Structure formats: structure tokens, C-alpha cells
Length: 213
Ligand SMILES: Cc1cc2nc3c(=O)[nH]c(=O)nc-3n(C[C@H](O)[C@H](O)[C@H](O)COP(=O)(O)O)c2cc1C
Image 1 (cartoon, rainbow, N blue to C red):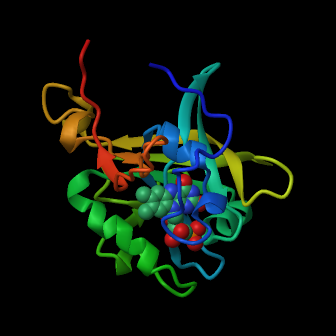
Image 2: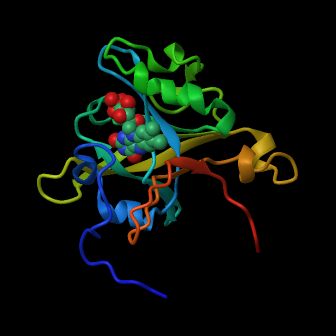
């Protein structure tokens, strides 16, 4: 039976103070999975920056491949460095290297070479001035197009990028080898799904695409 939810269901509670203002109750009730990747840039001191991202989407339009970063924090290094350099790389990890990707959050100091310090390999991009991550099976080198606030005074912005160059491991673009999907392919972020009737919280976790048709 379909249920209607127009405001915060009474059973939905914060797991930590401020959670429902940092995110939204609708985020947890809808719990729509999105692809997970690392955006890499150079900070203004020349050090590598890497920022895990979800809540994004990708579209081909008129022959251009447009990457929409759905929620970039205005307070992070990514926002600052991307506005300065106007270039970045989107790096798609597989589950076996995720722990190293997550370490980029720990090694997030201004003076940190975040990719190298997290046990990953930074290599030169082909078409942009940004590092790219060797261990990721897909790298999309991008240039900045525009940014827009979600609404006035919000915390995060939407950023549109235009792809300039793709680098992809042949084992992943060959669907008869590893392929792009399943547990060895693209990772999806599943952000703490909640039952709005009972308040039951499922842990944030990662998922894979299962092809069924
Ligand atoms: C699974 C996961 C997904 C994330 N998605 C985003 C995101 O979409 N946007 C964002 O601004 N931060 C996101 N973060 C948090 C940033 O990766 C983290 O705060 C990072 O250290 C900020 O890096 P920066 O200072 O280079 O911007 C995510 C973190 C995790 C663990």
C-alpha cells in the first residue's frame, strides 16, 4: 500500500545531532542510490586533493558528455580548488580499493597529498591540470562549466562539468571480461535507508548494479 509523506515522519530521528539539517528526511526515506567516485584536483599549494562524491549524474547532450556534481560542499577543498583551476578528474573505484578512497577523508589536510598519502597512485592527466588516480578503472577528465546554489543560502552547490578525455581499463569496458557492473564494477552509495513508519535505520552501505533485462 502506498503511503503519503508531506513532512518529517515522527519516527524519523537523528542518528547524530544536526543530521536532519545536514541532510534531509526525504533523502533517507527515498534512499536513491547514486554512483560513488573521487574527484581529484590540485590545491593552490600544488598538493593533490581528492574528494569522495555521490549524489551526482551523467548525461550526453548534443555530443557533449556532461557530469553534474549534485552536491559539492562550499566549505571543502574541492569547491575552492575547482573554482581556481577549472579542471578536475572523476575517478571511479571498485570495492577492493574503497578503504583507501575513504582514507582521503582522514588525510584531508591542506598540506596533504591526499591521493598518495591514502595509498593510491597519483598520475598525470592527459588533458587537464589535475591528478588522476591510477587504481580507478575509469577516469573522466573534465573542465568546469558552471555552479548554482540548490536554493538561496544552502550549504552545497550543483556543479556542471564537461568531459574532455576518458581513460578506461579494457577489462571493464569489455562486458565479456570484468565489465562495468556487478560487485567488481561501479560502486553505488546507499545512504542510510529508513523506515518512515517505524524509524528503523539501515546502515549506509554500498551496492552494485545487477542487470536483469
Ligand atoms: C560515501 C561518501 C560520499 C560522499 N559524497 C559527498 C558528496 O557528494 N559531496 C560532498 O561535498 N562530500 C561528500 N562526501 C564527503 C567528502 O568526501 C569529505 O568531506 C571530503 O573529505 C571533503 O573533501 P574536500 O575538502 O577535498 O572537499 C562523501 C563522503 C562519503 C564517505
